[in-house]
Amino acid sequence: MIPWNAITSIGDSTITLSIGLIIVTWLFVGRAWHLALSWCIAFGIAMLIVTASKIAFIGWGIGSEALDFTGFSGHAARATAVFPMLFYLAFQRAPRRIFSIPVVLGWLFSLVICVSRVVVGAHSISEAVTGAIMGTLVSLFFLLVATRYSVLISRRWLMVPSILLILLSPVAEPAPTQQVLTAVALKLSGHEKPFERAMWKYPRKSL
Image (cartoon, rainbow, N blue to C red; front, side):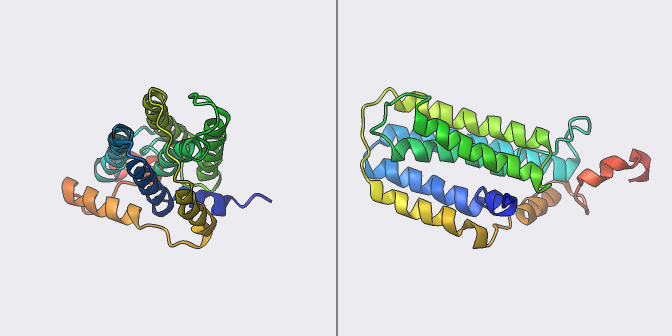
């Protein structure tokens, strides 16, 4: 039996944002300033879009009932952005190509996390797919930039905290991101109650 709940916990912001920070540290330690800046900008923009899409639905009900879409999956976006990068940096002595074996393995690993979000009922297919596309665009952008440089970042010891985070993810306390987003959305919209997916099941006039 596949432990989907344990797998989906790897995509939690506590884990993936921490690994994202480790990646930035890895780049700075290797004096890859341009790569570090590229990563921060691309990842930051993607996370802002994901956050904005969630706040838009919670606060104003902006989404798509036909597609069952209430916002990009943060787990999917972060996983597909972070893990291809992590594998790329960990196996830099492999051929430095965008679609090298480590990158593909990292993307497949993150894809399993995306599937887990649908299996555990946390997201619809449209939310997981669009989140995965968002994160993949981030990792592809970074890899396009990275292949233009011959910098070899050899601080392999930075892999250790990343591995520990992944191994400890099933017992880690999930970050209260949904509660924070709900509070922000209600504050901005001025509504007393958040919009929820279940509201789509009833006529608008009954809300």
